Image (cartoon, rainbow, N blue to C red; front, side, top):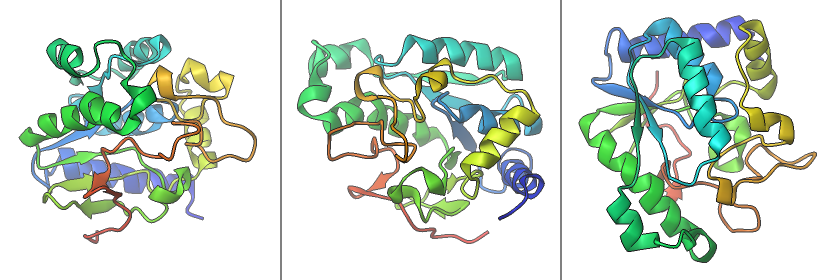
Length: 233
């Protein structure tokens, strides 16, 4: 297994390509400010505190996530975090009672998250994600750099990282943890569709529990999760 020093150096190199040398054009990071987000955001702060970061507020997030976002931004000194959300009009038209997730979670994710991000990414040539291979079977073959069907670059600086690497990095730099982690939440999304995980479950088992669903859709192409690299680094 790569040593943590090597992993972080590779991650910083990828982030430097994105924001310093601009190797891939105009790039933004996308962060959920979830259970493991502090690692990627800390690495980003070491490269460029003014790099753009998109945060999708679905209007159904935990209050703890919103507070953690504010706290982590201050802690890391990030200066260009942009919150994007479905409009109030769209919510009134599509899900006025806030119950769509019970009837059709895919449609709920699409209008609250996937479509919102797709619109925001029109201004960029690519984006940075915090995906790791260990998180779920749908992510088991992701590569550090991918080219998606729409021609955009997707950069995954933490693709090779293991859970112990993330924990060691957080301890090494004394990074604040999402408050729900201590309550068994290993992957944190909307409050309506996130639950703690049980012993032996993968990190994303608490997302959409009891549904035939493991991804929100922002990493899908033609209805399937992107699982193979289309570009080498």
